[in-house]
Image (cartoon, rainbow, N blue to C red; front, top):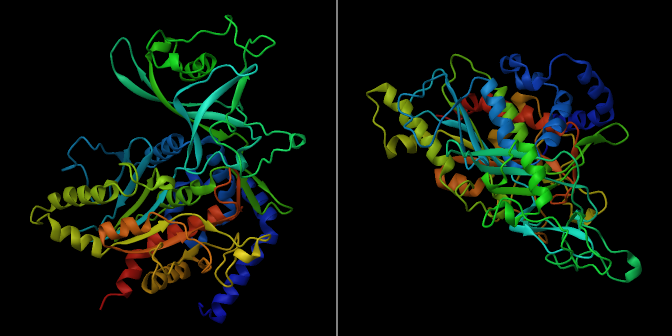
Length: 522
């Protein structure tokens, strides 16, 4: 059991009291001038000066406007470009392109992104303050051939579950469709990627009325009984499709011909394509179309889809944009957001790939080349990682009011208090005594409170990107999570102050890691 000092208890109680003030704070924040997300002045202030309530509205807007992993990466790219970050290409050499004081980002597959700022006083061998998380979420993706035969007058859509989607929480939800579309320009022959998002619900997975005696919770076939309806077809009274049903589009053998014609028209119109045969493929998915919004008597909650994990990822990225850029800073500040965490991180855009280690290696190689007399190789990389720290950041379970038997005393975090340091005795998490002490020191500098999370011995732990990344790089690491309720539901709950509290902590880490690291040196 963690021993809490009187000072810690006072700080925690002070943070708990902010719940009763959430509505007043949110109203004050809404009257404040420019959104903190676009306020360049925030990278000149200490983390402890940030007001968590000021970030509630920007976070909800992000969640509503960016439902897919591709839209999230697009959002971050736009923010980075406005903040002066330069995009790097995997295909090109980075030698001569990086310099101390520079800010850069690189993407992979359009669904993972790494951004980093090089300290103005950086020297080869200095470390990196890194935050890593994921931006994929449970969803239902359209099958390669999503057209299905007419069924009793309904147009249905063929979808496949991604991770644990199509569970009971997906019944009777207003679902829309979004993702990326691959298009070829017939004039130039060039292939491009366009993002698509329909702004109204077009799909629904209907339940069966209880009168029929078939239970709807946990016993249904996800292939045959969770098929979305997206419209009505021109069927006869017996349910058989008639000759007047709309024919396929795009020509024989085209990708469009394998998709519902009306859906092809909707997507093509949304991305400005008139020739359906130029649509080569797409990765579209269903998502809950209800906006993210605050709730509760004092507006102390946020209700939203895809909180796992567009919560920690947003807070971490905003912390990087607001991180200090002092003249004497000598470390690299980095945030990496991965795809495919929910299915094991095994693909090239996942954390088990080489995206993060390779990005750090190429950055150090370029920066070392500027020095001329610095030899780049395994020795320099080993020195870099030994001087680095990784915060693995993923949402964690908040204490549950209705299933108290799942809570572990003193280890079940609350909403609107602060991030939780996540510990697992079987090493499903990276946190140890050293990394906990370091991050508690960070919290004291940032003006935040660190909670603790650990599962009961009769429960099963989830996993994060932390163990795979810290073992690949050999750097010190800890797992940090923002608490939420209803993990892996189509719609979940977090505290209205939690995005801002997470941002405060992550900014505190990025700004103070170099200082805290020196406290551990002989």
